[in-house]
Length: 234
Image (cartoon, rainbow, N blue to C red; front, side, top):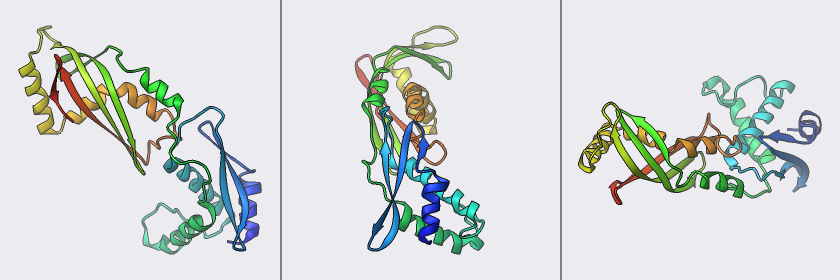
């Protein structure tokens, strides 16, 4: 890619910035070993959480759009698996890696703002129904682990009450344990986990800079507590 095209991308096409989910990505043209390339700074005045995967995808999309508009590398889709695009796709990724993908800011920022929002859901009494059992529960602990394109949210859920939705009859420890064990054997415990952790999930996915809902994954693991004891570990 010529220096003129790179300057056109930064100064004209981007107009010197990318606005994304409350943050501003700022491209700077720099010379390294006599090669012109882009380095990225960030402005984040609202303390927005972010991870590198959605940031990189947003920049990559902008560069692909520029290549398509200018006709550079031809009209192709870099995400296509078709063999006829292999040469163009490889060239695109090579240029993106060498010329564009240079981020100078901190990676994977779990902001105090996000932590406060998640913490606000702890020890808050919640009520859900699942397969004729109504649960009254609290989330007492959470831990969020971030990987390249995946998040794992682990929670401890304290079940305060459990009764049959149809009759109101209390569910015993043994019956509840059998119910959860049966869900685990069938693989349906994942659905219950998602329901129990929904209040935290909604906060996490509300930030497109933090998790890309199309290309990233959010999995939930839950340890269930009942009457002061562990009834099922994740």
